[in-house]
Image (tube, rainbow, N blue to C red; front, side, top):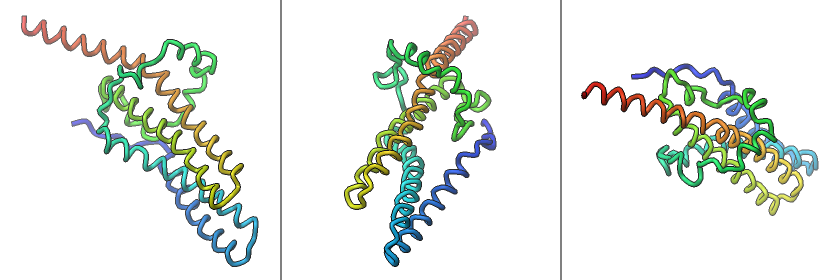
Length: 199
């Protein structure tokens, strides 16, 4: 059985800290606003609440998708299949140059020492689906503008948060075709090896 590495990514700790601080900040600033009517406290409560919300949906999304699909994705399906126009777009966006700076939440998910190429393809599909769901959920924050106002602030945070996860969707879609070719090559080699043993 493959042993899991200790993840070197700082993201989980950072996200938990932001979730905690954002939640506490929202509560404290809301109390200050209700007691003193401070406009700045109202704005600070919204900002802290949005940080907590956006981090919260990042923890919730993989749980929801895992429960719904059990990581059983078809990488050749309509949703995950790379379109003919995508490589040109990725060259225009210079994805090759900046994707190396993206920090994975869980590097073990993409480790060759822990997973086969086919398993990594599956994990890449899951990561893409998670980030796509987060892009959608990021815009649900606009509903908070109905009771709280400050539509502009909610819009800015929604667009910013969605842009981050959209870039992560792009990275997965950029990398996956090469990994699929490797997975197919590995599968063919195993089939040939099995055939040789039988014969």
